[in-house]
Length: 201
Image 1 (tube, rainbow, N blue to C red):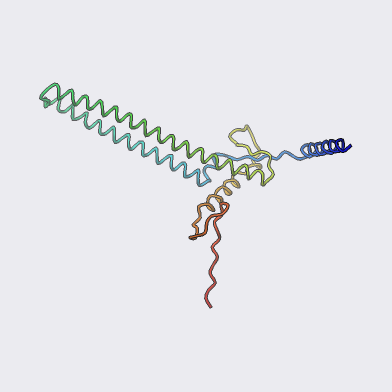
Image 2: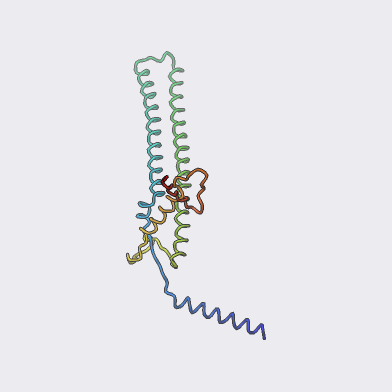
């Protein structure tokens, strides 16, 4: 009898839960990822890093190209003026030029690979920070889904929460990176408030 009562109670609870799901409206919001990246300070830092590494790569590439071109012109000049005393000396400079070109290519490939690893790491970190925040944001606001505008054909603009999400992300970043008084650790991502000292009487 007790077992039957427990089964009946379980079935009733399931029925009520199903009824609740059926009657609760499905709430969905969306973010404009491009706009979010423009507003979120960490995303801005990622773009700055991209530009910095790109400039460093271009400068390194130009420097190596100039070094090779300078040596090539020296070899050509010596050859045209018959300044090579032996064929062996000329071939030695040709070999040196080939080695310079090979080394430059390998150095640039290694630099590019290092850049890609660094950017991929930072991009994954950025995406994870946004995902974690969105999951918490959806739970706090009782949203069933948060979509990307870029992945949809059309979403009513009234469901856009991009600005609110960007504001929340920046607030969390600022709290985590706020100056902290000595001996006052950050707790739960919140910097301790600095109390104004009472003026002496």
